Image: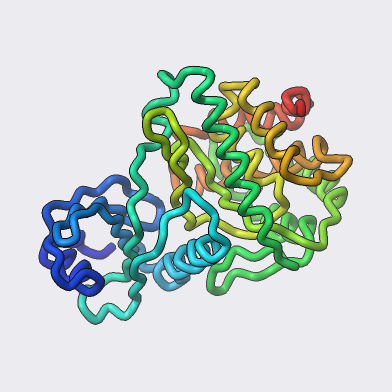
Length: 321
């Protein structure tokens, strides 16, 4: 792991894009799986900006920040509102010993910090905006499932994509002593049996992490969506089940509102409900794998519950639009 950025280093990279700027202060907002993220306050011009620094060597080699730079560029070109803009991306290590990106600052805070106090009417407005921004992503189409990452393969179908990862996911999950082994076996059988029903030959850009940590609000109004390191092309259901999996399971009526709004903007297949259930099963297993692999167990109980809901049919009952 690299050393944390110092003021003199941050000043140097900021001056590359704002030659007369002075860094007033900087504060790390989060330690993600890949980047250190800082809010940097500068004078001349007077503004806040976001600095992302890659601290993991393996993820630097896989060019994850370059991927995020590319994704944001695509979204900016499509003029999708509520997305930050890239100010600078630099992987040369000429001035500093790390790969970094500077983004515009979206003035808001993660919805998770306020969701308990948001009034019903305001929450509905936020969900409607979320459905619209997800729709903007899904208008961007590709012929393959791709993660936009170096050395990662591409796939021409969802069943082939799933089978490429399924055995590894199950092996890692079963290696954890507290994992319900029967649940993993049932999930494996369910996904092998059901995934061929998704026959898409075209895929859409998904944010893939539209969670309450990445949805920004201010004054109980939707501001935007951040953090694109997980973005990939996939079936459109993935973004929707992510919203349920991450936080809307607590709010059944808002989950149904998200689906109703999404259906207003998008043509959906006849088996939409069944597809949502299949993709939710895949996502639940994927996040159980991530929890064990990274030894982050705080959300695992919820992931197990989401998988149970897929297998016993109770998730299907929540899908109303």
